[in-house]
Image 1: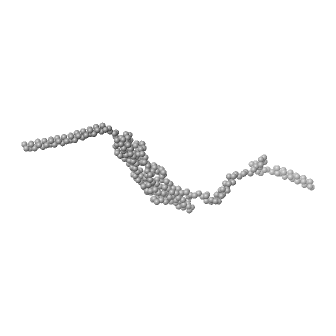
Image 2 (image 1 turned 135 degrees about the vertical axis):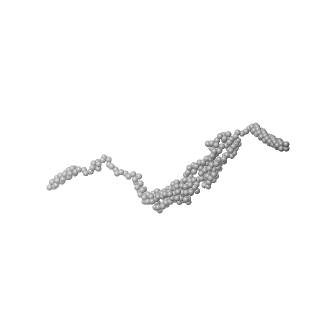
Length: 310
């Protein structure tokens, strides 16, 4: 019985092995574990991954509001120059999705042209002085603002050029004077005296006053022969680029200088002599005409008297 039991155990074991061998593999070929000659090691975690995650968690714990981006306010234009008494359109806007309030603060006259939740447009009228505009919005209880600078200028509308004297002998001095009334700002003005296209003189000015004033440039020059072949002019240039504007230019009417050759002493004596002789002959002829006229009148009057007596 024991021998049979042992034999049966062996037979049972063989049968189990046969069943195991006959059982089909339920795993797909790609997931079957294949023997490898080299033992595989678990992948290592990089040093970058080790500190990025703790740093991100620390940032979120220490600064919970950093993920929220602060809203901003915009104004256009931010810097501009405007001619005196003119108007300007100004736009205020924000990137806040739902601002609670907003507007524009200024001491000048303003008119609301159009508006929506995130922007508004104003017309600033009769700008007569330098000023600062303040655009503001409130979002989630926080207020932000943005400034804009407006500069006022008075253009050189009239440029006047004078030559004193207007006729001169070669070698003698004459004066070129250029004047521009009511211009501002003076520190941005340059007056250029020109002979044809040649620059004779540049005049700049100092002072930060915004009150319009008269600007004058004067140049004393010795007359040359070529001065009579060119026109003289004056150009006024107001450079407003540093204030957010452009360049304003005006030019005067051209002026002509009459230039004469110097006369020699002998020629002067001859001219004076000829003029004196001509003047003497003219006076003599006038006197003779007067004397003969009186004599003829008396003779005629006497003849008529004798005829009446006869």
